[in-house]
Image (cartoon, rainbow, N blue to C red; front, side, top):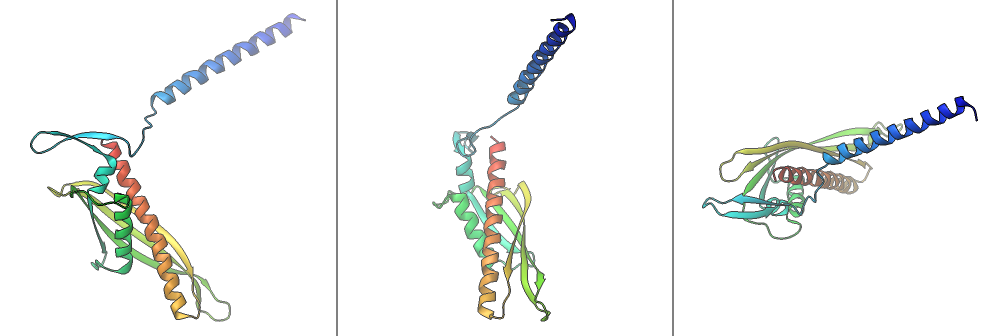
Length: 198
């Protein structure tokens, strides 16, 4: 073995040890900043009006939200709005009863439809894309103070045929699919907001 080979092996071993040390330090720094915790298992201590401490969880806070949905034009009980409201209430309350109202969420919905396909030689649409846009404001029910705002959207497509009932059913199914995605997104955003306040 020559002196040159010995120097190369020593330099390689030193470089490996240095890189290993850097990896360990980087991992330690990343883990130190990590704050992973269960979303629905975390409890927060809040003070009531009479000064008593009450433990509440994210799930209890979600279950105490009252939901109001309206179109941008002001129509409040359209079919898609009612479906979105019911789906969001089910997600927030996990299928159970709601708690006394502490928060209120107002959601404004806008539905846009656009043609995405045209039948050959007939010049009529063969498919539509439906987009549901929702802007929401979460406020405290007691003083109407805005706590959190956000936007969510979802798209769903459906085929268009020569049968009128089939077209209506396909459009409703697309609305329901988009509303389910929007409701799940809003619920996740609200849960994240409440978890960050703990």
